[in-house]
Length: 378
Image (cartoon, rainbow, N blue to C red; front, side, top):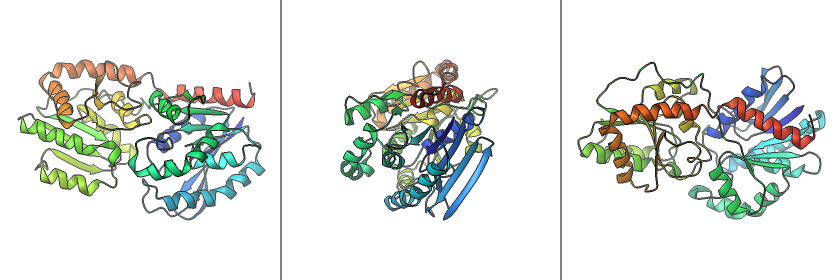
């Protein structure tokens, strides 16, 4: 079976959805009866093709992005325009069983335009589903009819969490949407042999520095905790449009000694970052399903998170989900762990156990099952 996969972002471009796609393709590389061609974007103008495995090819349509992890409207439109011809050429030159698009838009638009020719599957990832993302409200309003047309004509739609599925159904009630969660590579992300007995509780958050992540609330929570005399430190991994604003907030609260902003780190450095931490914290208002949270769990980190979609599948007895998303409530939850360190050990064991449920091999098996059902293959 040969399939064509579309994604307008793929590492090194993009964020969590691109990383999830790469992990899934890595599993497909081990599937002997599956051939996968990926059409995505490149960081420099031009067309390039890579072959990471005998049954995998990755074709990149370059657009000269300014920021690898942030998409401007003009860049999205530019990629759509340039990728369209290559997409149709690949359909002409190969006998694909189906097309699998990551993101209902913009990539789903290419599939919709050839719906009469070949069936397509959509993987909804988060930002492509109308919701509270302040930066995309205009797009959600203008493109709502386009989104509905793309979804309506898909052979199958998959959300990466139950929360995202509910958001999608609020936008388009009655449509059939299944759920296949993200996975985590436990060969890379695993607990250390032993964590140090440092007096300071080391907090970690990982994500794009944007309004939806609400990093400012974590900073304010640390200010409260340190004001109470508790020894806590926060490491912030990620980059984004709010970087300078957050640095000013940290300086204004005189927290330079307690909060470290390290920017975006390459994937190879992240396992060590998780293993050097004690608790993962998140104040995000919107997630599809957090790759970072899964990686933290696999490394044995308890989670303190505000309630949002994608959390309920991840956190049971391995952390705390807060209905009150104020800095004071976040601080209180962290203070409880700081004052009762024995809880961290039990939550850590539960985190590793919970993460074991989310393997990429299982994710790949579920998608391949949908492929076979869609094309009638056995």
